[in-house]
Amino acid sequence: MELPGGLEADEFGVALSYALLLGGDQPTSKTASVAETKTANAPAPAIKKTAPVPAPAPAPKLAPTPAPKKAAPAPAPAPAPAADDDDDDDWFAEDDDEEEKPKEVNEALEKAKKAAMEKLAKKEAKQRSLCALEIKPWSTEQDLMELFKKVKKTVVREGLVWSENCELRPVAFGLKKIALTAVINQTISMDEIIEDITEDLLADEVQSMELLSMSLL
Image 1 (cartoon, rainbow, N blue to C red):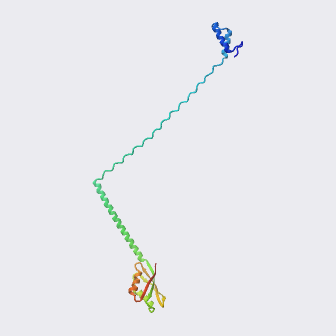
Image 2 (image 1 turned 45 degrees about the vertical axis):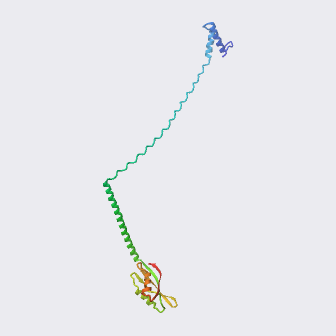
Image 3 (image 1 turned 135 degrees about the vertical axis):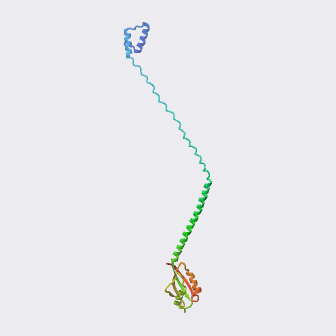
């Protein structure tokens, strides 16, 4: 601020202070008014900014809690005390029962097996087979129809049934053979019948006898 007389505010203040020191305690009215004017026009002191409050320090991290240790396994239970003599006697009694049970089971199985075999035998006895046969005579002069009737009359077995009729078929040089059938059950062997006819019963009249086929009825 420029004061009258071309003095600056600072220069005027210095001069006023010097005059007071030299001239006494009471300043002139002019000097006082100038000082008041300077004081009124002096700029207000600047407000100092306060420093920012520092942020609180972060809380320290806690160490992780260790996991609890597993408890030691419980000890195995002590073995049960040995049974008394009375218990031993009971065990022996149970063993006897166990030995008797297999015997009963075996007997039951044997009975069932026997019954099954008997049933199978009856079933087989009822089954029948049809046999196709050929009989060759010794010569062309033989009466083949009479030979056929003689075979039926001579060879008789339970479960054997000869056919009612037969067929004469040529072989060679005027010789013929008898073609016939027979029904037998499972208890009869046709091979045995053929052996009896050709080797014993009609050996002088039958040269050969052959089983051509056999089928179940």
